[in-house]
Every structure is written in C-alpha cells, then in structure tokens.
Image 1 (cartoon, rainbow, N blue to C red):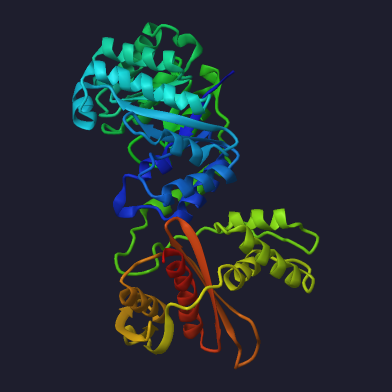
Image 2 (cartoon, rainbow, N blue to C red):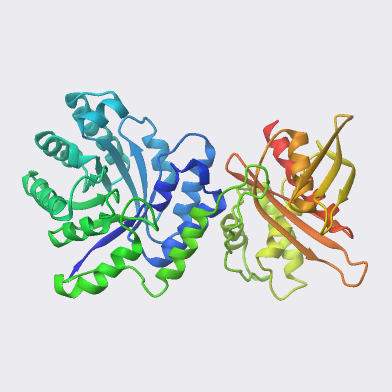
Length: 468
C-alpha cells in the first residue's frame, strides 16, 4: 500500500492574513496540534524580517517531532537565516517558492523566462548547500507555458531538489484536467522518477479536494493541505482516504481519531478577530501540558522546560532560575509550570525601574463601563492617562499602553491567591512579548487589580531595559 504524504500549510497561509494574524503563542499551539495529528510536515512562511519570525520558527522546530519546512522566496537572500531558524528540527526542510506563469513572473519577480530559470537553479543550489531535503514549488503552474514549466522543474531537480510541488494557484482546472496536467508534466520531466511530486490546488471553484484526489489517483506522492482555507482541508483528505484508500491501495499516517477536535481548535484560532483596542490579543488560549519537576531534576531539564514556556534567558538568568527552583522544590513534592512561570518572573532579568506606579483609580461595575485613571512616573516626570475597557484589568492595561505609546503582545495573564482569608494576597503574572522574546512580571497585593498593574509594569521595565 502506497503512503500518501499530507503536508500542512496552515501556518504558511495564515502569515498573509494580516487582519487575523496569529500571535506567537497561537503559532506554537497550532504547531503542537499539527504535530499531534502526525501530518508529514509543517510548512512555515517566508521570513518577513525581524527577530520574531525567526524565533517562532526556531521554537516550533525544537518542540515538534514531525518534519518542519521553511519557505524561501526565489529572489530572497536570506537562505542562511531561514535555514538557521529550522536547522534544529528533527527533520528540517527548505521550500523554494517560484512563480512560473508569465503573468506572475513579471508581476511578482519582474523577470523574464531565462532569468527565472537562472534564479530557480541558483536558489535551489543555495538551499541544497545547507539542507539535503529541498523542495521546489512551482507557483501558478497550470497557467505556465508547458515547455517552460518542464524546463523549470528540470532545472530545480538538477540543482538538487528532491520534491516538486505543482500548483493550480488560480483554480482554473477541473479535477480530470488537473489530473491529466499532473501526469503529463511528471512523465515529461527528465529524471523525475526519483523525485517526489506533490500537488497544491486552489478552492476557487470549490473543487480543491476533488482536484487533489484526482491527482493522487494518477500517482501524486502527496498533497498540500490546511485546517481550512483556499486549498484541500485535512478533514477532506482524511475522508477521501478513508472512503477510497483501499480501492486505490493508498493510505496516510494522519491520526484521524482526534482530527475533528483538533481542526476545530485550529479554526477557532484562525477565525477569532483580533481587537484593535484591547491589549488582550485573542480570546483563544491553548494550554501547555503541566510539567512536574522535583528536586532531583538537573539544571538542563529545568532550562528545557523554561524554553518550552517561551523564555529565551541568558546563562546567568538560567542559573538564577535554577537556584530559586531548587529552593522551592525542596519544600514541595513537585514544581509545575505555574510555579516555574512565577519563579522566572520574580528571578530572571531583575532590572532598575524605568516606570513606577504613582497612583491608580479604577471604576467598575455591572451598570457602568470600566475606567482606569492611572499615573506613572518616569525620570521624575508624572505621566497620566484615563482609559476605558471591557473590564478593570483591560482598562488598566490600555491606560499603560497609552502612556508608553506602544502595544506589546500580551502572551499570558494569570491570577492566583497566595494566602487565605478575607485579607488574602493575590499574585498576578503578566507575560509580554517584544521583538520575539518573552518578558514576564509578577505582582502581589491584597488588591488583585493593583497586583495586575504591578505585574505589567515589572514586565514592561524589563523590555525597556533591554531596548535601551
């Protein structure tokens, strides 16, 4: 029975959806979910510049067991940077994306056919220098001139590509037409028998799954899928393989027992609209499995969990965290992720206070809109702002953002009690992300709103110290 590979493009495709762009935390949760489904590879988008994209790639590559494929534009000069972002994956791959239709070559790359052939060959060779598993994706292949497409695919194979993807980007072919197109190009490419051929179909006519299925029936080695969107979905391909797999003598490694639940989780992340005003970037949250560390765990294991939580600490801060962890672990049977988060927030990157809380007044109730009147002090100057929000914490965080004139991604926010009784102390943990790095702050008070403000300011001061 032939194994059909399913490569998921959800993360790659979501990068172009700026309106509902995924947060750093959502990207990690999505990668974990896809890894649990056992897709054959997870595709990551082209690096857009800055540290955040590279850091998310590195984090995803280090935490999943499936193959990770990073996309590279045909004219991009960041092959080495892209490779460095995924090199620690269990099975790292690079994917060269190049338009091959006359319209797309002119519009996207401003190149004629001869120059595009040279660019494809050069870029595949550059990727092959770093990575053995290199893919060439022929974008808009169904609208390309047949002879040029064959030459482009041949050039990529000769340069070292081991996998070819033919795309019906515009969605202009019917299923039988797409299957004939695929079979024709594959048979016409010299040396193509030792290379894997994949297909990627657009759902412009609501036929993406049918086109992909027809190509698989004609010998395609795999299909590019996503949780949802303008391509065959994971659910559709799983259904096709379930119904017709035995008749066609094909199967996939996809774990179908939890497919619908996981795809539903991914769709909620993709469909949740991000508020333009609230510091809370998304209403969707994922949970990392709670770890149980004890006093017998060495520093390497503790640092590994700290990295899984999203922190990128220096060796000095890792040592401080481990020292504090040992003190806590000797008094408790185990230390979980919540305790470790609090240890990092209160131990790592202790810096001078650029911002200090001068005063705050919070008004909230079930018949009024929550407002925060907040005054901070910086360099002897008092900075004041009044903001409204969906609740007292939302209003307070918005007031801080307006004072500092910047919005940081709120990666996580936790509240818990540390003592009992009517005068109980509350502890708040705030995790902000700036430039791809995670900064956490901790605040303790009998007033939980005050504890939340202190936690935010603590994390903010660490960001300001790093930036200055």
